[in-house]
Image 1: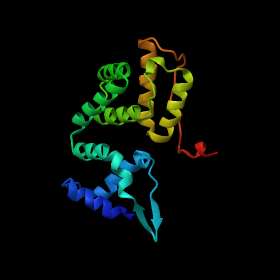
Image 2: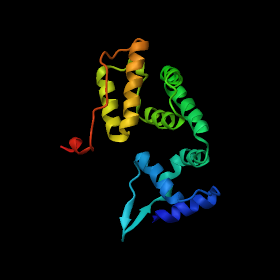
Image 3: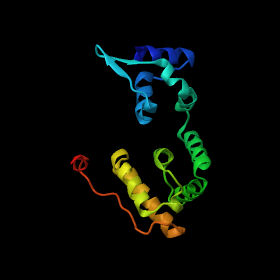
Image 4: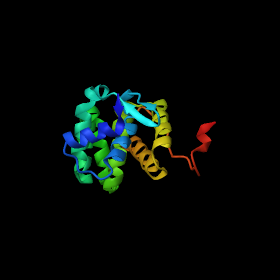
Length: 182
């Protein structure tokens, strides 16, 4: 086991990384990906990891590093291509929605990333339970603004195409997320 900071330094050297605060950037990437199921440990207030645990994820780590400094447009193209490989019908409709509503690039990036991470099937074959499950995750992970746009997409999809879900969905108002902790 080695200090996490040492592992990050090794990555910076191996990939010739010149990203400001890369330690924090990489930590956020791991948290966003739930550490790929890897469980780091704390020893004397030092975060320790086993570098070999990351071997199966080297390609994803490398892709993240390579793509981190890209412009948002380029990142969006990559994410939409990945979504197309996973859920082609949803990707096609999502691009139509983005174009029809002139969705800004930053929102496209976050919403596409969220859908790529959490959608298990094309939106057209989702049932109301599936949509509710997705929105429960969105409530926890997305800002209210992005959640509202996701709900708009889900409503637009139902109004524009045949779906298995029947209801219209809206992101609930909230001051904070404390109501979810009961």
